[in-house]
Every structure is written in C-alpha cells, then in structure tokens.
Amino acid sequence: MAEGAAADTIAGPKRPVPWRDVRVIRFALQVAFAAGTFALVRWLAGNLTSNLDRLGIRRDFGFLSQPAGFSILGAPDFRAQDTIQAALIIGMSNAIRVAIIGILLALVIGVVVGVARLSKNWLVARSASAYVEALRNIPPLVLVIFFYLGVLSALPRITEATFIGDVAIVSNRGVWVAWVTVAEGSRAFLIAALLALLAAANVAQWRTRVFDRTGAPHRRLLWATLTFAAVTAAAWFALQPPIEPSLPVLDGRVVTGGAWLYPEYLSLLISLVLYASSFIAEIVRGSILAVHRGQAEAADALGLSSGQRMRYVVLPQALRIAAPAIGNEFLNLAKNVSLGIAVGFAEILRVANTAAGNGQPAPQLLIVVLLGYLTLSLIISVIVNIFNRRLQLVER
Image (cartoon, rainbow, N blue to C red; front, side, top):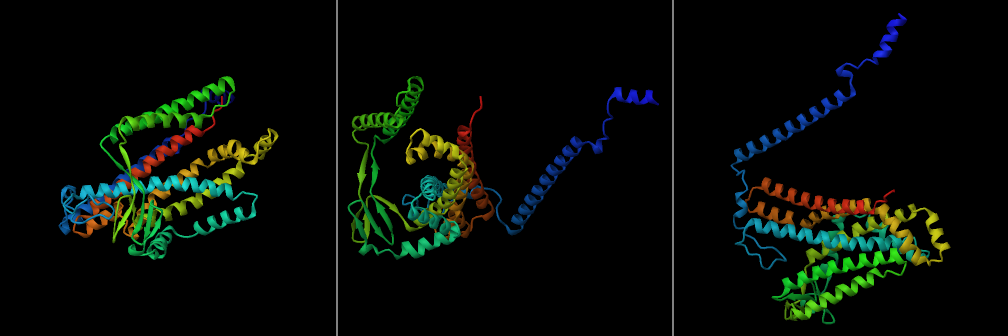
C-alpha cells in the first residue's frame, strides 16, 4: 500500500474532472455570456425591425440626404433646404464646441477653487467651500434652466443694451463680443501658426536639456513664448494681416460684427462649467491633501515660499493623483451637453428631435445621436488615458 501511495506521489496530483476545473468553468461562463448577449441583441434588433415594418417606417438611413425643413439657431449659413445630415453635423459640432470650451474652463476654475479651499485666508477658504457645496448639490439641468430663464432673460432689451466699451454688447438676446474675421491668407497663416507651435515645443525641450546638462535656469515658458510670437509675427506681416478684428456695432435692433453668444449657448456653457468645476475643485483639494506632508516640509527646508511650494512641489504631484478622477468629470461634462435640449440649444440631440418631429424615423436618428456622443466620449477617454500614462511615475 505504501508502494501505491509512493507511485501516486511520483505521478503527481490528479487533474480535476472538467466540470470542476476552474479554467473550464470560466471559459464556459464567458461563452454562455457572449451567446446570451448575442441572442438578446438579435432579439431586440428583430423586434425593432418588425415594429418598424408594421408601422410602415423605413429602416434605412437614406432620409439623411433629404431636406431638413428647419433652421438652426446660431447657424446662419444653414438653410431649410440643406440636408438632415448637414443639420446633424452642425449639431455635433455645437456639442463638441461646448465640450471643449467647457472642459478647459472647468479645469482652470476647478484647480483655482480647489487650491483656494486650502488657503490660510479664512475668507478665501470659506468662499471656495461655499462655491463647491452650493454648485455640486444642484442638478445641472436646474442650473441650465436657471441661467436661461432667471439670469440671461432678465438682461436689458436690445434697445437698452449695455455696452462694455467697444468690445461687447450685452442684452437679453445674447452677448456680442469682439472677434476676428478671416481673410484669404488664413490657411497659410494657420499652417505657419502650427509650425510656430512645433518650433516652440522644440525650443522648450532644448531648454530642458540645457537645464539637465548644466543646471542653468531653463525658462522654458519664456523661450517657447518668444519663439511662437516671433514666428507668428513674421507670418502675420508676410501674409498681409490674414486676420482682422471685428467689433460689434448696434444699429437699431440689429447687431453687426463680433461674435454672437446667444442665450441658449451661454446658459448651457456657464452651467456645465460651474457644475463640473465644483467637482474638479473637490478632487484637487483631496489630491493635495493626499501628497505626503514630507514633500511640503522638504520644500520649506529648501527655502521655497508658499507659492513656490504649491507650484513646483505639491500641485504637480497632486494633479498626477487627480488626473483619472478629473478625466471622469470631463466625460460627464461632455455627456451633459445633451441637457441643452431643455433650452433649445442646437446640439445633436436637439437637431435629431426636431427632425423626428418633422416625420423622420426616430430610431435611426437616435442611433446617430448615440454614436455621436459615444465617439466624443471615446476620444476624450483616449486623450485622458494618454495624459495619465505620461504622468505615471516610472521606476527604474
């Protein structure tokens, strides 16, 4: 009997039967889940197509080439004779514009307010805390409606508009601000500006290498700014000013020139920026507190001021910690652009809803809206993940 036990020991442990093997069970569960998901999607698609056929609604996307039959606020070049596809593209571009501008503004405001919450000044800290606690506890849709009906609609009428110098006109029909007009040489100038940006980045990298090699002050920002300014200035004079200033001018009830920020756009942008920045501020505050206090003590030992300690030591490490959570807030802001439908802002959902109200098939329009916002979210996710990888500490 001892010899048999020894033989079993030499042969090794017995392999479990297939239905008790963890790897087999995992594989079987994954196959079952994939099959169930496929069956569910197929059933939903079949149910949709059968209902569309029963109601006499077309199943293709050929309607996108038909005339839209409506105008779009804020898009004076779009006419009712233009196609539904063109209208959806304008709606998506409006959503992207709000998302990009909103993300940049929310990031700047959120970082400033987050740092202010930890200020030793009682008034600054309490004001920042009130900002965060008030805005993050109000639904963004309520903020959008409040700014549209309670703030922007209460501005003076166009005949009694408020002038801010020669650069802005404020009324209940919107805000007109000084802008620029693009001339014929604009494309070449934009190319020159991109080349100037690349040159500035290379100069900044060169100054970094000089600092690493010699220890001399790098002054990356100064050198890069001067390089960009020099190249763009040379292109400006060489191309005979391709960009000219445009100031708003009120003539009766009509404003010409400048850029028009209409109430629907402003109310959505302001609301989303304030709402997202309140969450970003709290993320930044928590990330600053997560930085080990030894870092601040080391900065004090080097004789850095409180501002230098925050700028060069604490804040860079805090932003590395905060980056993933801030990226989630960027995604939330981009998806909340769809709330503009409540005030008539012409983002892609509003455009699709208008087209569906004119008799176009709603399922296909909603699929386009879903794909549009999904694409926007995925692009933001990719960019955020790239920055996250760049900010990760590399152990050598």
